[in-house]
Image (cartoon, rainbow, N blue to C red; front, side):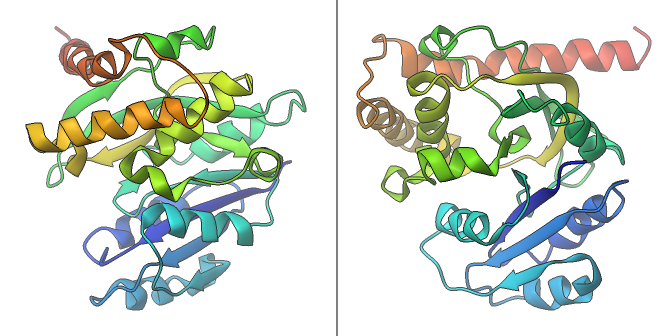
Amino acid sequence: MVKISLITATLNSGKTLGHCLQSVKQQRIPIEHIIVDGGSTDDTLAIARQHNDQLACILPGPDKGIYDGMNRGITHASGDVIGILNSDDFYPSTTVLSQVAAAFSDPEVEAIYGDLQYVDCKNHGRIVRYWRAGEYRSPRQFYWGWMVPHPTIFLRKSLYERYGLFNLELGSAADYEFMLRLFVNHRISLHYIPKVLVHMRTGGASNANLGNRLKANGMDRKAWQVNGLCPYPWTVWLKPLRKIGQWVVRRNYQSEEDGG
């Protein structure tokens, strides 16, 4: 079985880290879990140390932000496959990582992804948005605003070694640039697991107001430029507009769950 390394970047994550770590502990296969802290001033590190028995290491800060923390963790990871689990995210079932490991038992699989559910920060049973990613067929999907739910991506470590880490100059679009680099520029294949792999608590600064959205769009355009790619004029606007469909999917899903 492939060895999976998980990277969790933290910064004053005391309110959510314990739940995140518990969801990893409940997985049915052994995991190398690395905590990278950006210089927390709350009880984040104390909570992490309470889980020393399940952690490979805790890398203290400060650092240059969340993507720098992720890069630090990736360089320390020894697994064949690397996943990133944010400190306020958690796995919805005990079988997520065993399903991921099973997918990577095929040596031809280089990257996998799945679906993502946004849940209410106080009531985890309430689904706010359902990001049903769907099957990946062509890099052209990115030109029409399609995007992989980044928290659900697992990659072979060799891809980071071959194509590099997160570009810190891209700010909040660092994950978007990384996906364009791998899946559009270098045309890495993607394997889809049609199940919810991650629960994410609601929140996020990039969409908090119009000014932040405009700034995020500018960084999204830069993500295309640094890869020498030319998107359609509407590409970076379709990307956030696609989120509207996630609320529709959520309502349909909730109706199915309720037996409607």
